[in-house]
Image (tube, rainbow, N blue to C red; front, side):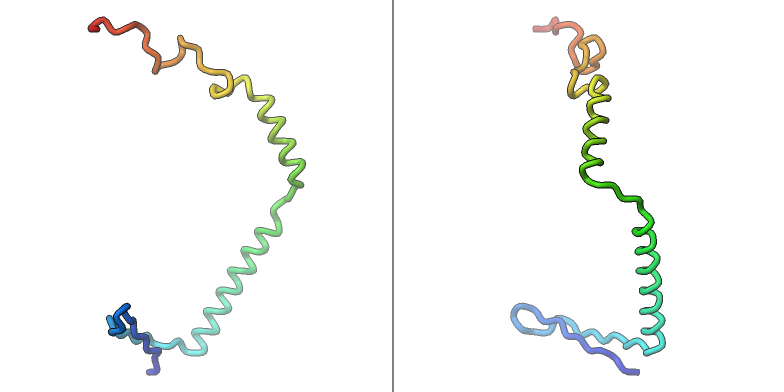
Length: 95
């Protein structure tokens, strides 16, 4: 069995560990490359099927959405004191 020999070197120059990994056979390597190519082609087909729109249209749509829903946005309109669970309803009587 042939293998690839790696030696991990520390900053002082001494070997920390020696690792030998078995080398893939050419048939296994070819099969691995083919599987990787198939996954790549599948991903590219998925990305090619996505409908694209221009950035100018997307930004205009986003601005319209924000304008239409601004009245329901608590960060823009605020929360009424009666509906705010974090606002004190009555002052502290201890002090």
